[in-house]
Amino acid sequence: MTKKKYTETQVKLARYAKALSHPVRIQILEILSNQSCCYSGDIADDLPIARSTLSQHLNELKEAELIQGEFNPPKIKYCLKKENWEEVKQMMEEFFG
Image 1 (tube, one colour):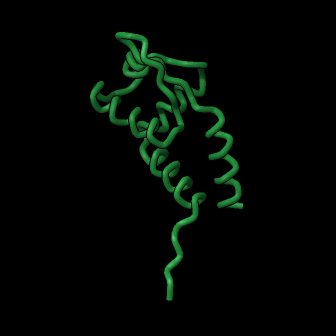
Image 2 (tube, rainbow, N blue to C red):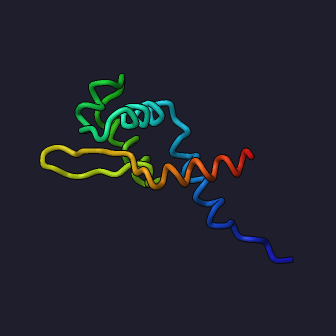
């Protein structure tokens, strides 16, 4: 019997769910959803975590393609990746349908 592989949708949904699985990342996404873009230093001012920890959480959100960063030395500006948010919303609605 041949085992089935994961579908592209299953892999994407799991990646999104993993990125959404930490309260700090949810808080970061809430901050970004309330403004068009934000610098990482400004985000750090709003969170009770070290900047190095913030960087790890931002990287996790970037890897899941929920946010995007633009490097403007010495700062990085982050924004939600809105097209992927529409996909997340649709996938979650279908999953929990």
